[in-house]
Image (tube, rainbow over all chains, first blue to last red; front, side):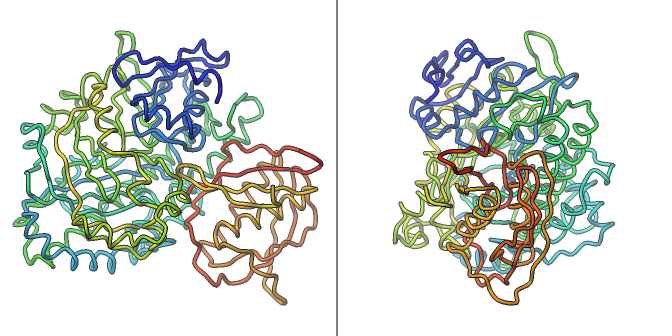
Length: 483
Length: 137
């Protein structure tokens, strides 16, 4: 352990600070939102070293931040947040990650959980049959070059306009499900090739589709606005930009290296960056928008397939099922946002890697229907534990550039998780807890066992206790489809 | 340390490898990747397909990342595994080789999506060149 890492001080409940004087290369403080146990875990798995490495970057506004689901990533930790001035600042592909706009969307319904439970195995099997999941999953959705480019420009809206869905959904997607993209030349043919066969697929690893029951409401007013009712079914979809986003990230890390690495003194080469105003910086931001749009389109397509399956299996139309999009939020993204810094509004490029935007009540980017409550923050647990819906707060705006945790956060490596699971039949074990699990990969299920993740209740306690989000509802899994 | 081995981080997986020169280092990187993907290294087969790999970069780290990215594309997009490497030129900033391929007989055990530069430095220790690469999985 770097001696500097030992000097974290708890400056407020759940908020730990390492002053920049702890390490002569640090340009800014490091702040971690964590319980003592979560902080210790982050110290043990080198995530804190990554928070410190980000604090060594020039031009960082405020502190190098980590959310309560912090764990080791590459370059940035997962759960990391870093803001740079929009004017004169830098952009880091490593601060976004490879799975650009990996994110989660939540649908509410009026389906009683008791009725769904009877049909859930049929729903699970239909999802596995019709939605490509797992390693190298490819979609049946074949787009020609023009159609693919329109998806990159139009995001979720392109799907709604030309394939399926409700235009009303767009209001409930972060940034309306589309960021500006009008320069196809900034995306490599290889990225398009990887992406074109994967639109409408779930992928593998921690990607999932879950059908859940709204188990407990903590904030009835916010829950009412979000359309969440106790005892009713909700659907959660977690996936991203698949091979397309990965190729965009890889391409631009190479470009940034070629142009800038030699003159940058970096502790970790994964933190290579460029000026936002440089040609390569602007090109990356355009390509990032294209990958974000791909991811929103992907989740929109998956939503429509799941809704169709529910309609077919339950024998009712979407209207009768009361299915509506609560929110879709990005986890891996860099976005231009205005925040108050030292009492003044400042335009920033906020990087969130494995972290969620969480605007407070009244913010103009919160859908009008939710503006009195704040932005929904969807926080999935592991496949065997509860998930939460939170909302953004004013404290979050002040402390974390309106950012929050994006999940429970891993605490065991995949290898450790498989070893821990041993000969356990994960499906059988979860069924005993009332959860039906569908997956093509037994190995994948072992890698994703509940013990591989931090206790989601601890993560939520810190998130809420430190004030950066507030609890709205708790959801319990009924059916899990793992990639 | 073995010539190549796998390791895990909390969220991802990686390989460590070494070699007495750059040719061996690059070759062992590919063997480490096979070990991670398939749990073993397939044998070189007579008459198998080969493809050229030529890359000139800013250092061995850059060559390694691009070599492994090419092997990943072969594995995941074409279902092919690199069984051996016939080196033509292996230097710190350059690799010219033919990758000998065979159709993959099994599905990769893990979906490796990208090769990262995280903490990647080729170092010399006890006469061996060593490196570790973390993959996004």
